[in-house]
Every structure is written in C-alpha cells, then in structure tokens.
Image 1 (tube, rainbow, N blue to C red):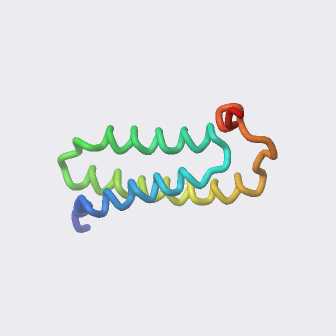
Image 2: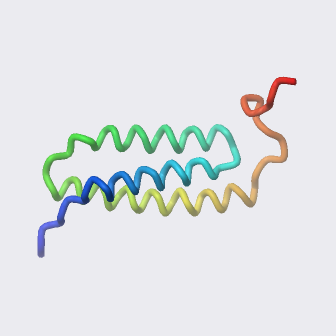
Length: 92
C-alpha cells in the first residue's frame, strides 16, 4: 500500500474556503455561525500536522465533513424556520 501524500497548501485552502461558503448557506443564524466556527477551529487544530499520513487523513476527513455539511444545508433549507432569529433582526 502506498503512503498517502500530504495535501498541498492550495488544496487545504480550497477546502477551507469551501467550508466557509457552505457554512454561509445555512438559513439559521446559530447553525451558520457554528459551522463556520467549527471549521475554523478544526483547521486551526490541524495546522501543525507534520507527517504526511496524518495530514492526508485529516484532509480526507475534512472532505467527508464538507459533504455532510452540504447535505445538511439542503435538509435545513427544506425545514427552515419562518421567523428570523433575534440576532438577525435589524433594529428599526
């Protein structure tokens, strides 16, 4: 079995931006903010991975989590609340 190659910096940044784009698609404020915060935390935690197999495993896990988030955006859009959160309401 061949050793897994570490993802390039461009691939990692692309995955991070995809997480941020996907997170912004959630209609609910709390879920949207949680998704963006969780993605940033996960990437920050894995920033110092030095060995290629661990970095490749973390990258593969990130891609799987991105697919889960994309499916959740679809599900949440089907059952979106009619009213906005208090945090999202504009002061008049």
